[in-house]
Amino acid sequence: MGVSAEVVEPAGMTPGEYGLLAAVDDGPGLDQRRLAAALGVDAVSVGQTIDRLEAAGWVQRQVDHRDRRVRLLNATAEGSAVREKLRPAALRAQERVMSVLSRGEQAVFLDLLTRIVEGNQSYAGPGNGRRKPRRRTEPSDPPSPQASA
Image 1 (cartoon, rainbow, N blue to C red):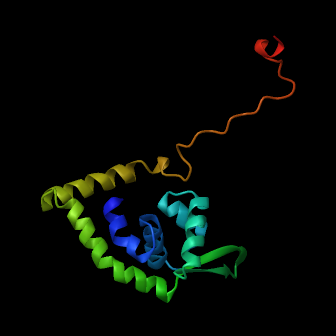
Image 2 (cartoon, rainbow, N blue to C red):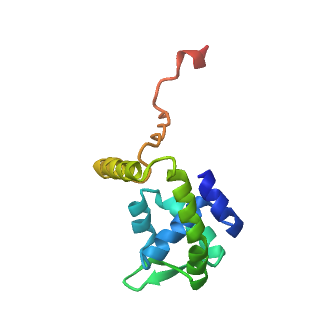
Image 3 (spheres, rainbow, N blue to C red):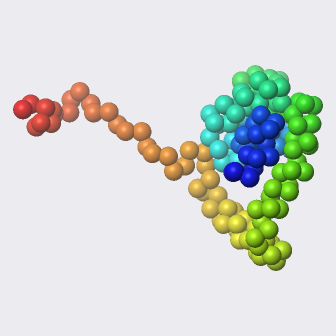
């Protein structure tokens, strides 16, 4: 994250915002819910990030004519230009991080990482791993012994 931040912070964005902008730019017309599912991120977090990208003028939402509740996402011309401007530095940063491995090791690492991710898709759902909400005690529950003392 630190290496990515060095690349994208001068443009006024976070690594997560850059990643989401890239995903929208690569998949124009996706709706927010499908984008969140594809990335394994909860829809609320995606929505908040899209709000920031939209405010910056890098992403736009359009009403889906098939379902007016759905907003389709597209990178603006400015958003695509910012991404293209940052892409060479982002690729160099990625190469710098991976440079501790030989080319062969990089290929093996990426293959193993891909297999781990693909083999664990059932765990990739948005919100997976979060704490379950605590149940409130019902009024019919008997008071605790400490409460009556």
